[in-house]
Amino acid sequence: TTARPTGPRAEAYDGPAFGLSGQPGSRNDEPFSFERFIVGPCNSLAREAALAMARKRQQSPHLLYLAGLSGMGKTPPPRAAADEARRALPESRATGYASGPGAAPPRNPRSRVVYTTAEQFTSEFVSAMRNGRNDAWTKRYRGPVELLVVEDIQFLAGRTKTQQELFHTVGHVLDRGGRVLLTGDRTPRDLTGLDERLRAQVGHGFVAELDRPDAIVRRHILRAKAAAGSVKLPADCLDLLVDATESEINDASVTEVESLLIHDVTPSSLLSRPVDLALVQETTALTTGTPAEPRPRPLAVSELVHTQA
Image (cartoon, rainbow, N blue to C red; front, side, top):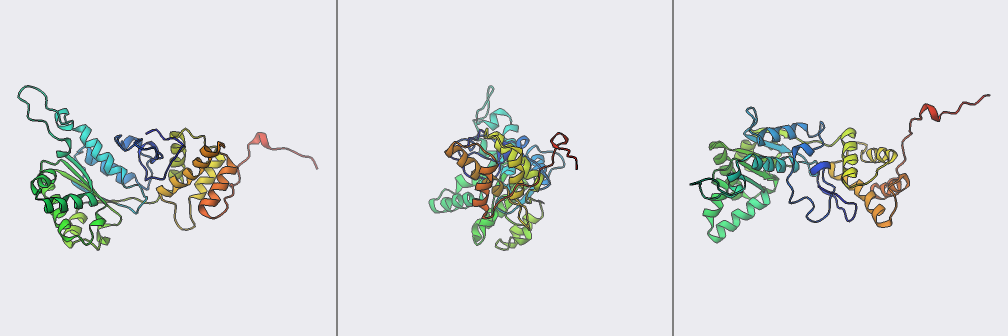
């Protein structure tokens, strides 16, 4: 992903630096990669579990559920898992092109690896029921699926029939040897808006939670995102931003960290100003509502001046 400081917007982390892009079409069509992730205690288990599932490692879970509040960066692992699984398929199955004499007809790559969201799953299901396209819907979700990814299943709360279909779809994929990766904004036991059978099914899988990034991870996010956008971020500015993204109670979310950096990059680009301590102090005060003060910088030995009484 190539991020530029012109016209940026806040996004959940993805790509080389949790996703500082904002340019239309700059990342959405590019594959996600596990190797690009900035990993820390907040997301390491989720990343490794999703990677193991995508690569079909022997000890990988067949049903994985990633739980995390909005902005915690829970979208990139399932997206990367889907892309990784597609790349691992033989060419004729991954690309949709048959090869060799007497080869089977071309397959749609999504017939093997299906990535969707709860909202899209619901929309497709409702549309199929209304328009008599049950066969097409069944072919997509009940075919020879090797990996099914469904994000944000908390949005199915109150949608009884859709929940039933997801329950049976997950069971179908697992029964046929496939794997399922689901995400939601809370742990399975806290998904109170979902049917008990679906909650129990999700809870029987491997559950990995994503937490808020600590100071070390926030520093790597800020540094990598700035570098990806060709933004020179001085050390004192980096220190100030790391401190500014920590509240008295919790560390900031990934999205909040990204947003604060973007609020520094945008004025720099629009006003043709360098990203320096004065600019970061101004933008941080406007964004957080509190003035940001640089923390004391340790002095080098060469900077010390000896005086005599």
